[in-house]
Image 1 (cartoon, rainbow, N blue to C red):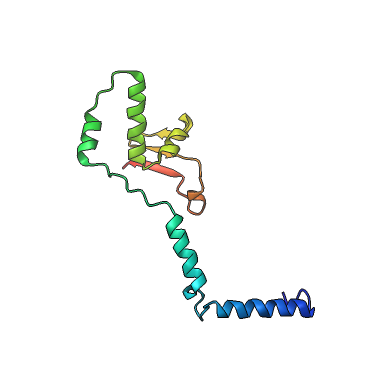
Image 2: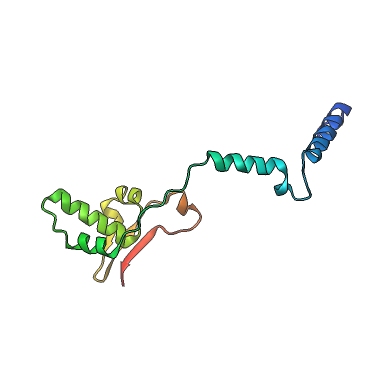
Length: 131
């Protein structure tokens, strides 16, 4: 601010802002200030509580594997769920899969997914099942 304008009003305004900041409880560690702690309290109060989902049990997996689908729709659902589980895919990734994204070989299959925000930093766009 000082380098933009050298008027006395700007210097006075900056000086007052710094005085107010230090009087408001600022310490040498900015994270310890009253302002930051008040802000964090408010965020914790207004934030949504974490959701804890029930983990899948080995018994659930056995029941799923033993399930014999009757209709074509049920077979598709079972195939998609098995693929999601085997490739560690999220439901949205499974829904967005195309037929050309799945490659079959003699020993395994390769599933290619479209990159999303989570995968932007790390390239994990291919999941491999089998050996």
